[in-house]
Image (cartoon, rainbow, N blue to C red):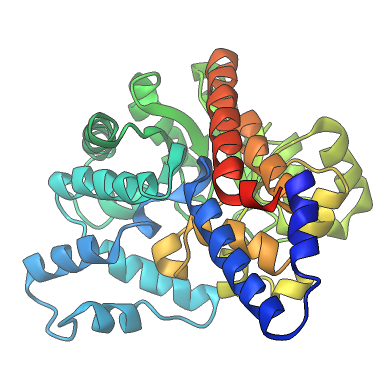
Length: 374
């Protein structure tokens, strides 16, 4: 694009002028990324809870004297590997105990996303993580509360959202089947799909074949975490044994060139979460992360924040990292952005409307931030 070439020309100066130009353009780029319309396809509501909201829940409980302020909370949410991350996750969940908490959780997460100009979200939630330890709660009650929260958020901020129930591998296929039966009545009322998180290595996708078959028959849209902590075989299993329409993460697809070809040919969306992969150390460094190669090879890459509170990230940050760490151009950012629309579970008509909205906002924002370079 013309304005991208002009940016390069502006950076040809030397010394102080060049540094000032770079600072100006960096600031302008950050503002541009903050304001572009976005979609989240891989976001766990429980992992996206704003710190202030979680701190409020902890204070209400009143039995944790070690968490006196937000700084204490940030330190308590620290971890160094995936196993510790799960422990911290469960600790955090222990403060979400009432149906009203789930309504507030959904509302505050969507409020935060709307402030980043996220237009549409397909958000995971894991009811069994709560009903397993709190017999006062039910999967239906949690779902209804989340639906209330997301309706309030739509009314107040205009952000659209759908829920994807995560059956969680660790609870087994019997529990997953039970969730399908209990929650199928919420399809079309705020619930749109099924996901499969949890311990990928210990509980292979094949255990859940019948669960996904039943979900598909009932009208659930299908996604599954795969290739995050296990290899390419796990992705194949999600595709062939579960019939997954999208792959959550898909990080280790590179282990099988045939899989890469298959993903490219079928344009199967990957819900990629770069900072998450680095923070949990399933990928050691940004340099080792395959997202740039996947995009270059024509895979349908989307970018998402996964558990932004837990990973100290945001969807804005994920887009900036594509530019800063992987050298994505703004035209490539636009492609990733539009991939998310294409990969969503919206209807064709809804996708077309969203594309029109995105196009208008992109044109307006490129003119706003880069017209001086023309």
